[in-house]
Image 1 (cartoon, rainbow, N blue to C red):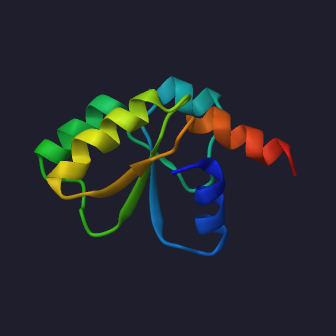
Image 2 (tube, rainbow, N blue to C red; image 1 turned 45 degrees about the vertical axis):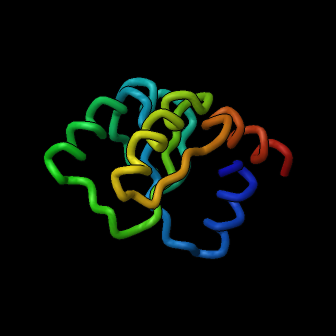
Length: 100
């Protein structure tokens, strides 16, 4: 999902669970999308193994440039999750918000 698509969906009030898969220190020190929760990439897979990540809603994964969040989305999609990743990550998100 592109940054513009995500921005549009969020502005329309669509219910999307935002999971930022960056490490805790990266998340705390970097740009964030309002409402995103931080679950580092490795912990996402642990939560899935323990059946602690619900499959009942749309998920968009986020990271700095789009690589890690794409891996998470690609791995979890076949496991029954309605999941996409933010193309270009938080870096792309920042660009569209700087254009206001």
